Image 1: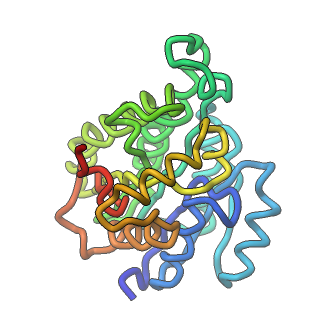
Image 2 (image 1 turned 120 degrees about the horizontal axis):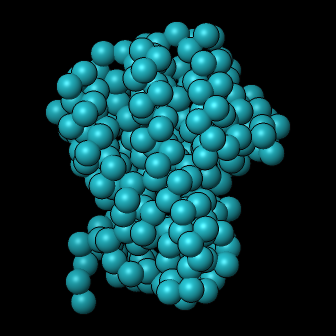
Length: 256
């Protein structure tokens, strides 16, 4: 088990279909003590899920747009668990109308909201964790992104722009965190049927295209993304930082 003795925080678990849940399962299977965070409206669902993994716990981080909410959540985690070895940022949100309409119609408030929740929250979480001195030596930070940050994906719109900002943030954070021996990387996962994906117009057609054109001719699962996350949490990836690793059955390398 590559995570035996480690404590990792999985931020953004919503239900059994969420990619973050796949990460929590993989980390648990690899021996980690798993600490989850979720929004208030998901708390009961997540508690039920965690019954499958004895020894795990969940904390509410309701609004990552508020520093106070992040601060309170991290304080509770540190008080109960002490220092941790990793954080997964699996948090993103955009207004439905900004995903359903053409990108050019994105409102100023909608643009700011997507950036704040989906990108800046990573910076805020990592900064506060470091300030609280709750990261163990060699700690690993991971954030989830998607191919829509690199290429135009129909219906991804403002979220693609937010994910591009997230990926740039990972690169800049790698320099700052590296001074303390911490690592940070992103996983660009292939499309997966999640609650969030329902907000993307014609999402089913994206899955069909990936299955047809990806070199491995299949769609990725939350377990596959979770296993890759466990690897990045582990000491086996100790020389990797500032990278965006594609876990998409090769779809991102295909041209025409």
